[in-house]
Length: 327
Ligand SMILES: [Mn+2]
Image 1: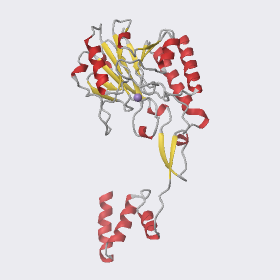
Image 2: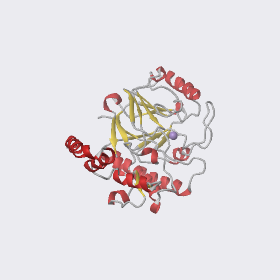
Image 3: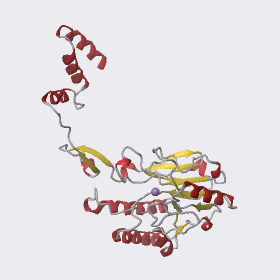
Image 4: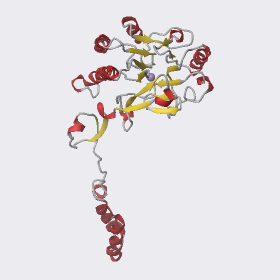
């Protein structure tokens, strides 16, 4: 029997004020949690690995969010008593600074306290041994790269059983103009069989044994054009089995629409960012904008272009030749 796990992170459940018609932002976050449990149960998957940012607002949590997440987990753990969530805290779960050698307050602490099947591995000594004898170990989000490296080095020196799976929450392969915490192929990762990194909202396989998990639902305009989903892995053979499940279309996506444009049925269910219609700054520009609008056919744009730039005696021949190139 393979020992399967779902790997998901950065759900960022919150009662966002924007794009929140009918309270749908919080509802969608809870719907995703429910979906993960159902999927796990239907596929005999025992473990849900969730390295952080279950929540979004860590300092003052909305009552509606605390209540909804607690009720959702209570119901699902009761319905599916074999399923276990294994987690570490992300920066969005933490309400105090996360520094080396100091405790850190996390919103996930209460879930760890309330639910036997919610295991928080914020202290690396809390490693979890699966039924099949594999080890799950975690490092919570650390604010400073050197603090993270220190803990990573310590964890790597402990003797661990079976395949060793490391859950982390750091800036790795971000592609952003900020300094990453660590390189994916750093030798400090050598002691681990597979590394699952949260925090970056782009799903990507970084090396043979490391992924950026990515977020399962669009959270903001930064998610436009990016695949959203989660991963499934066999803990006995992670490198050969890790696979991404694309659910981009399952929940609303952010889309741009021009003010005044009509919405299709699909569009009306999305998170719509309305952008102003382009305004021409003179009559001449308005005419040009109309002649070269992207809503025109290529042949129309070419005809308008040739009429604009060619002397009259050359127009007919050159335009005719140009049109043959388009077909
Ligand atoms: Mn994060």
